[in-house]
Image (tube, rainbow, N blue to C red; front, side):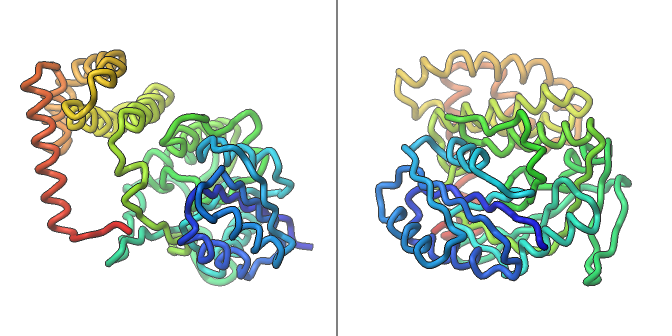
Length: 350
């Protein structure tokens, strides 16, 4: 008998996209699913749509929750899951019909505790295919029974593969053996929760001798919306971005050089946005800015002498000081850079 797979779907104000998401899950070729929809206090008709689908498909279980954010919703899903494996999905995305079957094939045929498949990013007028992985000798190639080839990493190679971007820093393109969440949950009340959680799980898996496997086939489609967290420059999102990146930098000391650029990207968002904050927000940002400046100063020589982009080097220099001129230069430069990128790509978001 096939093993039960729990699909955890947090839902918040996605009525326009929710039917496509749920249809893609219930039409999976792998049918032994427990579909846990955590309705996170939406103010639109998302709950009604979830309940209508639950009436038509007994595998769908709707849990109503007060709005606590995506981390809290995912944690509720974990607590209520009964599957041998867990996979997470977002209410505005969709998957190919054989996505979960592919997860299961990978797990069964390689022994993977984490199975990862490729994903595309869907904009309003184009599809982006993210690059997967930096060159690495870690792991081995295993051929599945359907002829597809998957890269398998065991023990310490799991962390090496993660650091070399063989796995994206998200949870919605992965299936996890339920046991990997023992003692680990998403950080509630914070954004960039995927970054914060994935490195912790990969590190635990590496230390315990676990296995992770990656298949590049793009079977998950992630919709990019203007309101997505990565395009929202509120003080909270900027601080949470910094906390996630710096937490990983500190948590993986042997790989710190690899994550200097990611930390400085978070610093750059602060310097680009600071002049637009209210006085109250500027005051609230004081401690975070001090941490960012200490980081920039400590890594200045390494950044300027290293193979970092011109953008990262400029952020490192500008963030050495918090004078009004430096902050304004950062803001103007950031807005110009953003405008150029938008002109090159066109109107991308839905």
